Image 1 (cartoon, rainbow, N blue to C red):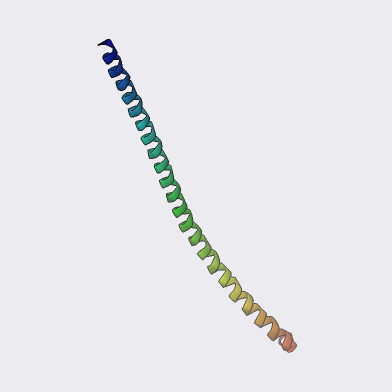
Image 2 (image 1 turned 180 degrees about the horizontal axis):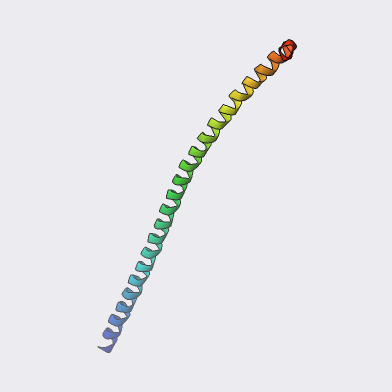
Length: 86
């Protein structure tokens, strides 16, 4: 009879160990999932911010290109007509 009692305790201990391991695994998976979610949110925000900054930079470059084209026309006109400076 003591032998059966020992087996019951061993099974209870094994079940307790299994439950503890299960909780630890669930906690690990939960932490991992949370960190993946945070990383995804960061990357999404980073992408949006980067796109916005690139669009702003593109606008500024377009404006500079238009100014440069205007200056090139003015210089070529002035070079072709030096009498404009007299």
